[in-house]
Image (cartoon, rainbow, N blue to C red; front, side, top):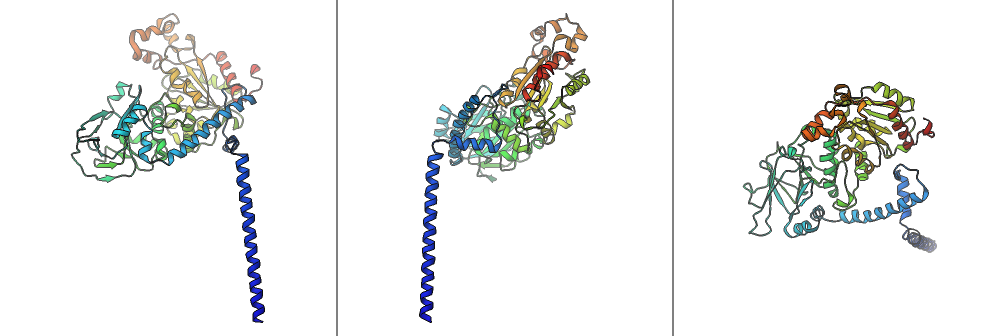
Length: 501
């Protein structure tokens, strides 16, 4: 009986062994088949994977405002695939690099060579100055002195910069705290705090309090400068404005994994493995991928970052339901729409649902107001900072700028030029002299109305601003403006017979 049981046990073990071997062979065969299939199917055509990603993430292909034909889409997708594939390689490569190496990516050419050899270099463009060190530094917060390790004993260099992105604005720069970068021996050599990630020193002074300037000179430059380091930075803030920090409290934690260091309160000595002083500026409300440290961050990436930060649900205007919503930025002090009620009635007759934004308190609450804007297909307003809210519009939306009489400075650069880079359609309504309240005051033949250039020629920018921005209101010609609204409906795809609207 014992021998029989033993034989049965051996038999069962043999069967189990053969089953395990058989299963292993099947798994190996399946794995080899999968590798072969992947090699033959996908290696030669990475576009298939990219296209799938485009569909899944809801990425909207926008080719200006013209009807999209299949050949154009193929051409566009093909070019985007090439960029995306190259970007993936760069991103993976950058993430595997040390922080010291990534800091060198913030400068180029001779500056990068200097940074590699000495550990310190400054990138000086027409707009901004950014100084980078990829070697350990001591920062005395009480004096805002950044102490570098000299590359040799004979070095004794000092650089003073004001860490604000718009260096071309002399009025603002007078109010930005200077930061001294020096190889001199620090008077307080001991570190009170040691950090494992680099410092980024910047000012929240300047024109903060104005939405346009907050994004133009702070938030977008901060993204450009630090995104490569993927939150592995410490923000060191001079000219600390609590209201600004509070307003953008959702943004800062997504760019830095550490609490902000307020130099007005923290007067100790902090030590870092490197430092960036100043922020990069590319252009008004935008960025140039070609000027980025690594060449793959675009304005589309920044808008994606903003959508994620504020949890905005609408990526594309073409995925939104009827009726189309128009947000009217209604100014209450200057550049008011004197016939606003009639304008709104006409908008509603054309099929728009109209939201009027007139309260500064409401519009300054970005966390709530960004969702209102993101729900709109169209945003409209007279030239002014409120138009910077276009950053929150979904792709394909229309931004209408009403251009006041006489004032030209920044009208194009601030809003019309950035729009297409955000995936938006820009339209403009230029008022005629009779649509300006200045015609009621001075008459159509007065130089203030008939020869607006003479005001700037005589009194400069300040005189032109005072007259045409601070003293002017608008009464739109509804027949003329109707054509702009009909054109808008055509762009957002909500009116089939726009010619007869």
